[in-house]
Image (cartoon, rainbow, N blue to C red; front, side):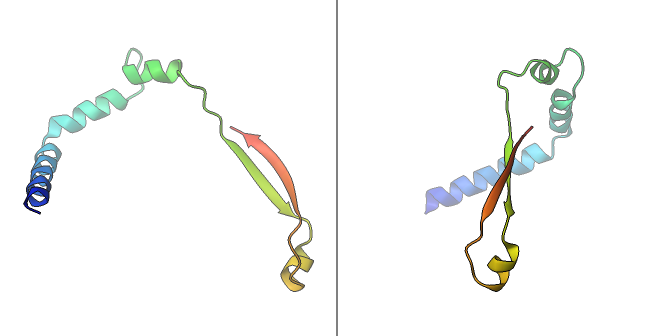
Length: 83
């Protein structure tokens, strides 16, 4: 129990110290900016992994029966939409 309290106070102190340092915000914002020659620009220009997002949408083909008569919904797949 004492170790948890000490660890909590330590992380609280580190958080307060790091949040009060103005140059830390400057460094983070400088590295996140997309400027020619920056590390983030390099990773943006040539990503190591190609990420694709596939979105599937389903259309209910029997809405009246499903809503009023308690039938199982019949679904028709639309997609995938790939981004």
